[in-house]
Amino acid sequence: MISASIECGNSVYTIRKAELRDVSTLVDLLADDPIGSTRETTNPDARTIYEKAFEKIDADDAHLLVVVTTADDNVIGTVQLTFIPGLSRMGATRMQIEAVRVHEDHRSQGIGSAMLRWACEEGARRGAFLAQLTSDQTRTEAHEFYERLGFVASHIGFKKSLS
Image 1 (cartoon, rainbow, N blue to C red):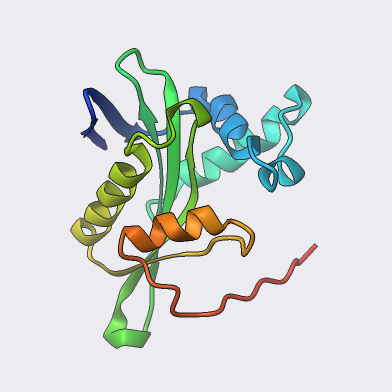
Image 2 (image 1 turned 180 degrees about the horizontal axis):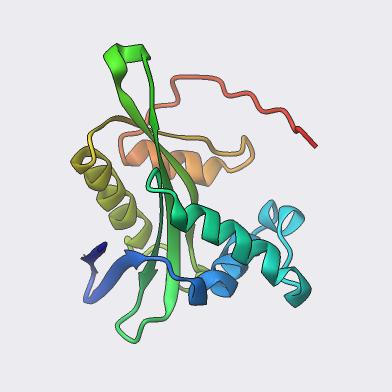
């Protein structure tokens, strides 16, 4: 069971494994920026699509979707971790970090930093050798944030839509 506390300023937040009841809030977080709003939909008719995706993530031990909550269990942040075993680097496991979001009302309070520090600790605990993430080229503030946390822009990433 995943449950951890993080302190930011005078507040304590909980990191816990996401649950099906969190899906609508998670979609709202993913859609709440200029890029996410073009990729996600908050239309209630699409809820089953997101719920099926959640069920796949939740059923696979290689994936960990967590939420950050306030004392009254309001979801204010999320991150998804995927553990990828490989042959390179002498059989090293990599941890892919995806969908890092903090609700706009709670940004700049250290929550994102604490969440990613926890994610890296969790990755190391699970035997990952390396944490990696991608960030859209236009998200320059996010790039500065990741660099402050010790991430290095060491590679160029490529993506190709398959549909």
